[in-house]
Image (tube, rainbow, N blue to C red; front, side, top):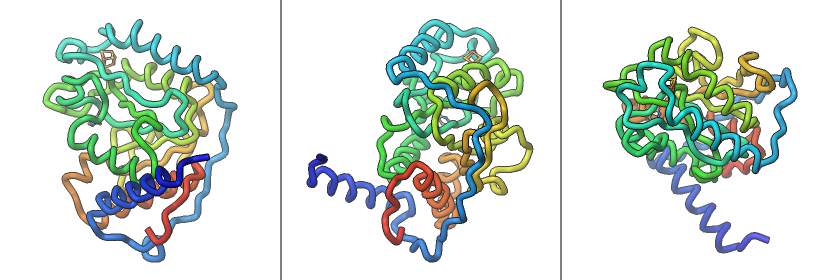
Length: 252
Ligand code: URA
Ligand code: SF4
């Protein structure tokens, strides 16, 4: 049985993270109501690796292939690759665009200001960073933080596909335009796509149909730190919590 003090501390921390995410303003759920969840049907059975095998498969890909990868020009300018991190058995995978300077220097995804905000988003959901898996479309930093070019995304694509096949998450959250447009194979913008479940197209064996929730990138949120944008992201995350069976805090 879980320690009652521990669960109260966790609940209090979650409320604090929600408050921080929302900028100190609680948005009552009556005002910020959730759209009806219409989950796509999975079109294929998900891969069923045991947790230990998932961890080993991800480690092997990272150590033997990604760390030394020279498949695209980003290998020439990176300090190091950023494979992604988290629970190999996660039910939820967050996908961003590509490493920035902090990530290139540390080798870890989302560890700068955008990462702090992502941590708050995860905390508001009642989870920790180590409960989810966080990765990017490209594993090496594009110089001057430009968007990754299509040949770079193509070269790196099989790694992301294999990460998703190994982890076989219940839900994928794409953050921002590059990750959303590439994973959903669309040219539509994030503003129109966010908040609506989409099935992952048949991009690779066994992952087609995985429910995808597109939302704003935390870097966008930092630039547009408005109550509306923040409550939109929170509404998207609440939909994800519902599908994952996580308790929604009352009136938030
Ligand atoms: N932005 C991203 O898209 N990914 C990171 O890892 C960090 C910032
Ligand atoms: Fe290899 Fe991807 Fe890095 Fe390009 S971005 S060098 S494909 S790991």
